[in-house]
Image (spheres, rainbow, N blue to C red):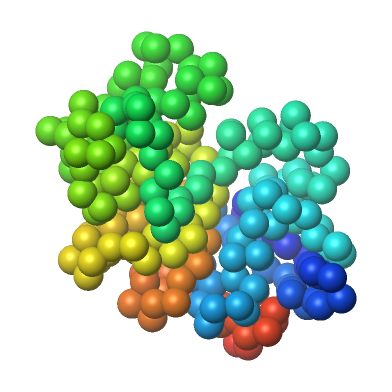
Length: 222
């Protein structure tokens, strides 16, 4: 069953079409890489899939819900409930510990402390950072920060995980560890993953690779 769909997506900036009629469908548990050079439209597409921007033409559905028809309040709720996001530069809140960063999305959704504690403990164990749970982000390495960011993105058991160059700010060993973690956790949680990357190695963990150039898919079956 498709958990994320896009049909006929066009996005223009000024008079230039950055995305030109893209369509894709992602099923539960499926990993899809968006691979291509800088400026080809990968991140723009990711923003549209995540409801951070809206297409000039076409429709995006997340969990069956048309994002462009949702009110701002409903869109924020859908994004919190159904979507996890990982960025190149981690975006952990510096005044919260590693554990508190993972707890935050669940608190925003109104989970009870009794429900939050075991879920957060499970994820911190899964990313191998039990001993670092009370550390501040400034005390963590880049690889550790990204592993906490992965745990935070998965905390609310989203349907879809969007990752924008998740290893782009890491050394080779840390990047490889994060990629292995993403593969393991997407399988374990049955969460769909759409990952923007320049890296063939990163794309290799995905079931499908959609290569982009000038706002179009070059190959692959969306």
